[in-house]
Length: 176
Image (cartoon, rainbow, N blue to C red; front, side):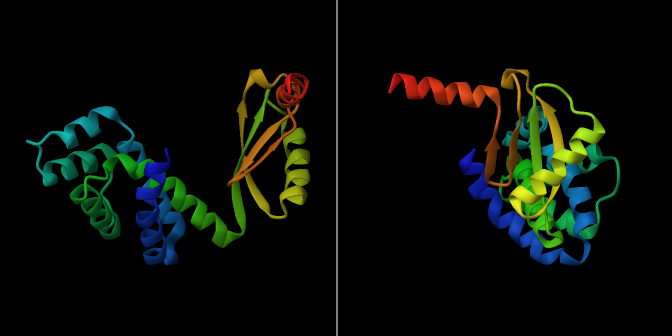
């Protein structure tokens, strides 16, 4: 959702600037907060006008199971104070993208009609890194509707060599 991305951007950038000394640790607790912020029941509780901010904070903290570092607690309080609990998953996604940029890597998702073996995935990774011109952190997801080929989403770039995409191109060419 574009609105969530717009709302989440300043939070992700501010967190990134303040936590550059511990990006991996920050990503760890931020992922936990994002998971908590993705639960509808928690969001409904936080939206209840009778729920106080400290109650919401205590609930989120208890769901995580571990004590939050001071930065994390301050960040969570800011998010709760501004009624932005629902954007935590997007904040985590944008923070991950910023942190990956520092390391020179980009998160990429490879959609295939069937799971690839480790060897095939390694060969594909080498080819994709040459194609995109940077290191990639691959995640594989199955999508049987592709029929064959692959669809790769790396940041804001998409490479679609699937049979499904080619059939769609042929269809639009024939109906034009």
